[in-house]
Length: 204
Image (cartoon, rainbow, N blue to C red; front, side, top):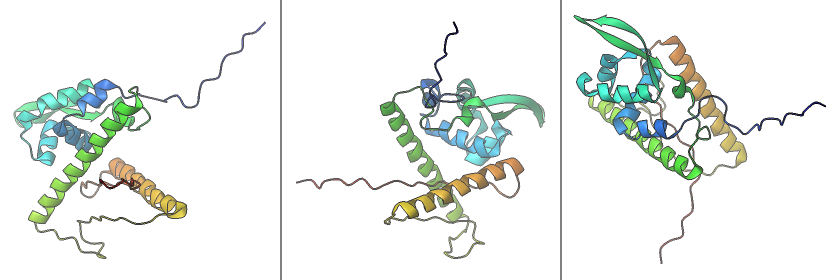
């Protein structure tokens, strides 16, 4: 008599699963920024991340060690930098598990973590915009040649329009992956959010 095996649930997380160690590593705004920069620039060294973040390289070693311990980064080689050698980092296995549902933490904790991540992403983008404006870049609406662009919109979306916006964001993610694979042009930071407005009752 053969024993029937119970089919695996399709809702079970597939691949690497984020846990407390990963969320804790990104609690630091500095580490979150370094992680997002590494996503676009890897393979990269600490001196590369220092240049991109505007921070001193000497201040980044403990942050990189935390990201490496959480398996967001992995050292792949050492290269000469002047008179010394420095480690070059690629994205680790946990860097590919960027899914809200792909976590071993409970829903309430995940919601808290994601809220913090979104806040830090927009804060980093705000700094980038201020630097670009200071360097003389001006956002010109309708001009695709301008390197600086942003939008803040509130509108009504029915299901058709919401899906259309979602498809635009999906296409944007495809372009992001193409850029990371080809590594041509300049580095840009892209931050986008689509969320329903939660109606709050006015205080009496």
